[in-house]
Length: 179
Figure 1 (cartoon, one colour):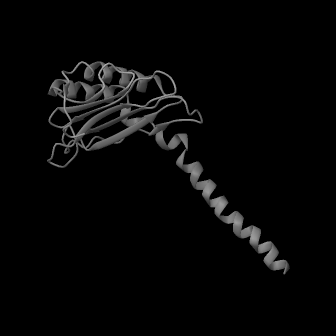
Figure 2: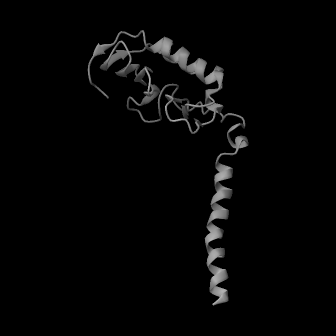
Figure 3: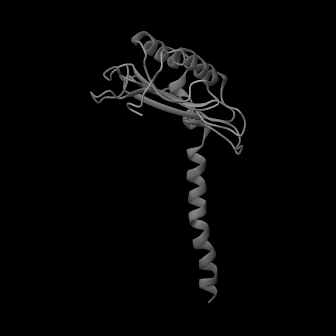
């Protein structure tokens, strides 16, 4: 009876000890603060390895409890772009457009300049009423997605603002392709 009474709490604690250890390692600041991954020049400059018109870049701003802009912009390897205005934006609904190769090159160059590929995957906290900004870049054999809501570095904010400035002025036509 005494052995089973002692064994039960020990069995409960063992998974917690290992779970906490793994959790700490997963969020260790040193794990993501290392040098950015090497660039694989064998991959295409824009988009993934597949020969199809794969995703190259996306920028999403999520809603909040206030009047935050909410939209998603996606740019594909060919420059084909989609925009979906969700709330608090001038252009509401699904639209299509075309980014130039120079605009796409500028986005990758800025991403590299701001250190985007070396940023944490997530900047978040316990606040629930703040909007998120989500950026994905697929270039030269790398794919990086950053979700930012709380304690976002200035470099990420600047990159998001730059990307918005490049992509929002595209000529957007009503349409639903590739949404």
